Image (cartoon, rainbow, N blue to C red):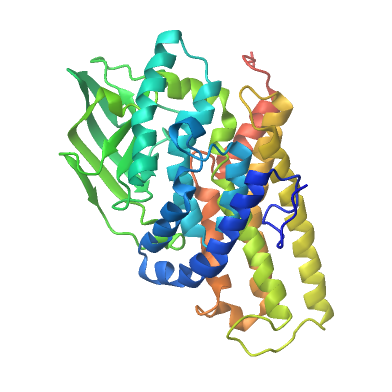
Length: 415
């Protein structure tokens, strides 16, 4: 096992040389750059452009682009480890980074595990070279807007945003809300429903198309003043007869729907941010009780039994979350077994709810000073509370899926 001079947010695992190198890079960026800047993005509700300059320069923006296309070729588990390390220091950076990386990972490693015809595979291989080249050669950032204020992002209905086939490409019309990286991305990977000219839209006709930020008819609107994750700048996007060429397809027709059925772990990636945040919350609590927070008086509070018990409880919950998380990323693959899928749901719920539970304990344990905005725990509390709201797997939806899929086999119905 490759050793490190720090304990990663995911704990120690048998890391490959690449994983150890990328974790070290993410840890140093997080510790020296992202954490000192995090309060600024939160206070101003502005996008962390400086952090993205660092991600671009370090090569992390192309982390999941296959090596044959000039990327680092990191696999699913490697990305999840690195994303957690970033989330440990700045939740907004990690969460938006996830949207960008998914655009490369879905079209790369995940797409390789989705069944396609020979013609679809040839089309996809050719077109993804266009997108990968933008990331590798130009340092382009891709966003991935899901939400529309309906059940579409949860997979329960077709997307209201539509794309109609025209000569040489597509005409896109519709609206997205909570669109992270709004105004910061170079391309927006829009999920929309193919408009076939009838009144029967179908989720199986979901398209995944990249819209350039400079496209005519594309607009960004609305304010962004939320409780937490303020640096994501997730404003509204509107599309009015926006034309994109055929080569802007990130997946061939109908392949996204197959991917959602084949690769459920594709929706687990957002949990990495909150796994890292949970570690950051724990790190702060220990440092604070030991009187080791930089800039604060070196007052120790560790001698009180109530503080010791609280830290022990936090560590127990954190280790439980890590165990589920690391097993889930190790098992991530196309067509998981029922047991693996249920465990994936359990991991997602445990991390997304657990991060805020740790923050709650941290604030209670650290006491009144922890409410002050010059300390990071107040921001982490607010950021972590937002995790359970993240589509397509909100906390409520995951519990619903888990219960239903436990009690019903595929195709079963009650008479």
